[in-house]
Image (cartoon, rainbow, N blue to C red; front, side):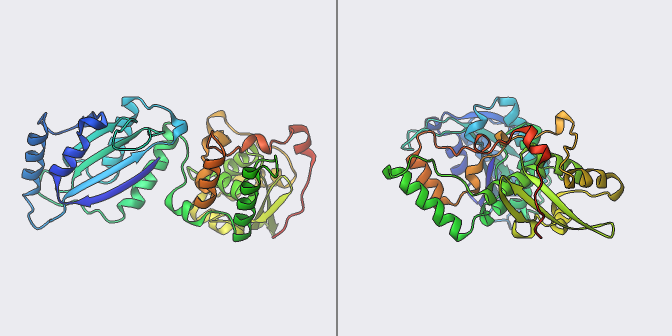
Length: 343
């Protein structure tokens, strides 16, 4: 999911937008008593007027799902909306959750994904303004957790979209491949750089801050090999490989061992060294079914630079980039091969 938060001062304008009949609105949930726009607006304004010093009490949160999530049921949207409300600290505030249809006459094309809007009064029932510092970051964290709980597509956060794992050289190569495919000078489909694939795999494997053992096992399920350097009983580095491409963890976003410990995984020497030894010896780590991950949970397009994504969407009708099928490795070959660790 991708979420966006805006702050304003006009409840009437937002209520009119959310309930515009042309957008096929469906009220998913609300704690407002009124059933029409005027009454709703009056309720919101009355509550906000308890604290006239706040000039912008209107919170507008929009949430869009990934196209692969399909059509979401009402209950799922309601649960996600309530999780957002509570997670941001607005559990004692007025709110309105509205789902819009995919067909919007004011847009030139049909939306390819479901989306909903959330109106919140920043002034609570007691007349106090809820502190909204770091709301955008909090919202992203809530959405990542809800993606996991509802088995939705894992979407790259704004931070991940900003860093992207592609270099200038890789971007130029991708653009060249797309253009060559477009004009017919080659029949080979453009490929996503392995650095991007590894980065997206690391993000998926660490999505719920698992133990180091689970993280390493998940990477194996994604056909990403990892090797950890152990010196005097301490782990001092990590390297990753996908097919014949190898890269040190420090070259990726929050993927060095120290950054993994700080941002992504939990580490217990006594419990995790067994898994570390396993991966260093090219052996498969066991993993409970409920902890499994797969490439179908990653929207790899979110890791591709926008200029490349737009080119790809013009070239391919299906508007998607193949991931798993392009680099699946036979299991019997995978267990026995080795790769030299490069730190």
